[in-house]
Image (cartoon, rainbow, N blue to C red; front, side, top):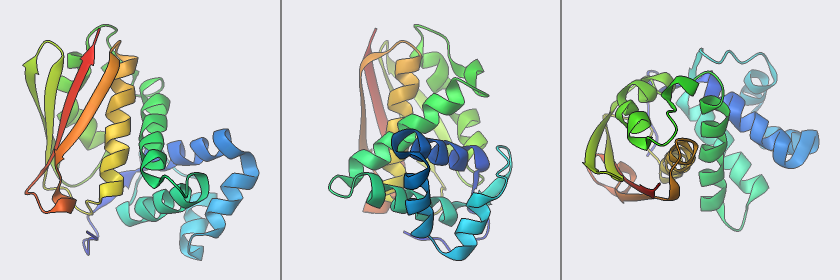
Length: 193
């Protein structure tokens, strides 16, 4: 579902992680291939200086994600979106957001879901509910520009985030999704230690 709101924004750190993924997986040639798939205005932004804490249009990120999936994994676009989310978690949680990682305690990271959400998105909110020693539910309400592709990046992000926190055999289900007509998005996270 596309959004008409100018308020739907995402942090530059997400765009930076996507571009880094491209260079890691396919080098400069892959990066240029993806950029050529985008409108000139998008290319201008992405070829310029991207501020990690700056806000950028969510629609730009959605177009970039679609171009990356088409270039890196045209036969399995879902995998490409999950990989993008994993790369973003890897980049940010081993960098500026490392304070959310406490080895052996994925609940510590997940309990900060509301704050982490605000680091990436300008609209909406995310909640955390502990359901057991190795299970939690995250819910996102009020988000704009919700697409199944963006939800796949969120699944990948949380898979890798839980792994970085010491979780093994991580599973992130997505039983409810606004893009599929539900009132909110829900992510069911489980893991072993």
